[in-house]
Image (tube, rainbow, N blue to C red):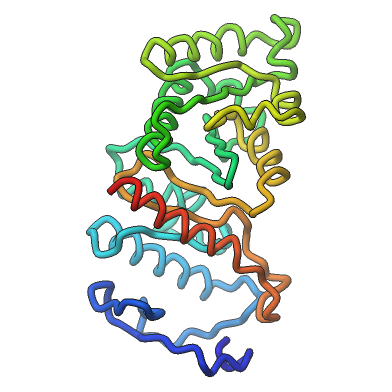
Length: 283
């Protein structure tokens, strides 16, 4: 890439492991001694193996304390699959290194933070996956992250309803009244300032979301679609609840623009800066 784009002035250092990293330089660790054939813009078995090897090495370094934080770039979730990697994504793999810790994915932009009760589930499985204990657990995780990782002393968390109009008093389902409201009340009894459930359309269609420090959505698209619309800076995904700091971009692999020198680096830049901010807040 350096040669392709005439970036001869860019210098970097090849090191054997994280302990050799030099400050104020780009440090590169080769995870294999093999000569890999790189084909920019194409999904190949070699690329899948290489991305898993890099992820495994970085996660081990993170768990061992050799690095302070990890920022993951997008991977192809299909070609990374193997006998060693049978996960829905990088987050589930990283979580497997910390079996004693629960986590919550929080999408972060300058003004908006959205967490998820369920994440990568088919829509038809969402209602049966949601229960009061799970919602309370996610509220506790989000509340703790807002305090510890974002330095918000008394966070206010809005909880979205599952059904249209938050079930409209039982006219459109009963999950909001039977499951979500009791969960919010239990969270309040535990000292968490949780509010709702709010109908998602009106909540984001007005400026209501600006009044809260965090938003808890019930499923993937309910939170991700408004986030992508409202987060004009691109946004970052943060895996909260773990003893380590891990952030990532929320966009996927851009095969169509690979090797053209037109990719926008801002999303990755924001992910790096957020990881640093969270580290500083924890310290």
